[in-house]
Length: 445
Image (tube, rainbow, N blue to C red; front, side, top):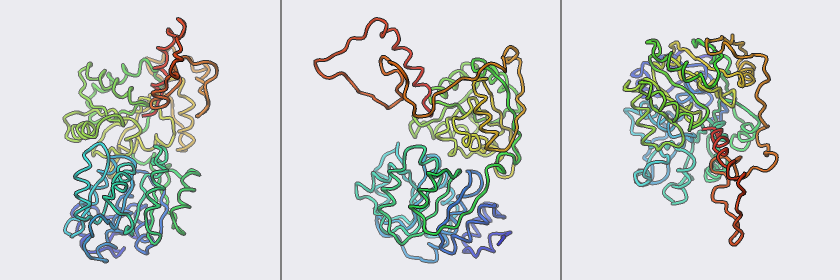
């Protein structure tokens, strides 16, 4: 069944009024598929990226159900729970829920780490209808008995694949274990690997599957170009382009947190005001950088994939892939920061010869074939040179690695020789310790 306007769904008049104020008139494909199923009380398995309107797809029909049910929330017992992987995405969803519930008596609160827990505890004590939360901080509140999930009637897992990538699967299952068996469950994911299929089987009951394919999203109104630029020359290329007026509002994606900080600092030295945003930044610092970018105080934001799905800013003119992502699906999320709300946008990728295999993976996912454009910086690049060979993910390094150089951030920290058995490295080992930092920089941000 196809719906050409929101009134056809049977949504409450207050929700239709809210949509009218927001100048939202026609449902997107994911909304047209999901809203009727959610209105019928069905569980839903949705495949859709950010920027497709899925927040409205799951929140509008559930808000409608809460309005029909009526009543005030009891202390600590929300009726709807929305789980999301990042603080930025939680804040974005909370903003949408606030707009949709304007003019109603429904209340909501956003819960995430990096800020004081006291206001969140106080809000739960007063009673809230809708909670939007990241898994870790929500479990903190559950463990402190500040929130009780036994009365939740509607639960949404948003960006489920990202949640699993970030290691939240255990937290998610602990939270699900606190929920009542009689509930409506909605799971949305940008991709549908086997791990998400397995998770959905544990959480959903006879779900309706709705899907918007990534191939459609990547090509629609986004002008994509790919340039061959050696890694050492990427910064020079970028500084030259950012001086051009058409690069008005730019998000640049790097592979690592350290790379984001370093690139932002280098741009500042070149006279280009920018901010960096990634998982190691405090919530206050992340919000400050994002607010400066939204207001136009800075026109360049350097980010990592951990927040790629949480950056929702209007009128982003360019997305630049300074480094190609480790996972091809992340390319879709990155370029989706531009061309939002029906507008056009430009996506640029800078490709070092060693990244050609990653480019082929992106082409396979999107069904596109990119014209790899040479630049002056690539004049002496040998396209027939062998590509960089990386060990399979999870493979253990061969041979001795003095000083634990192969460890990533957070792995093996604090390990020391047993008391009375202090090993003294040889002179050769001491010299090789400095190489450990190179492996650390490969940690995905």
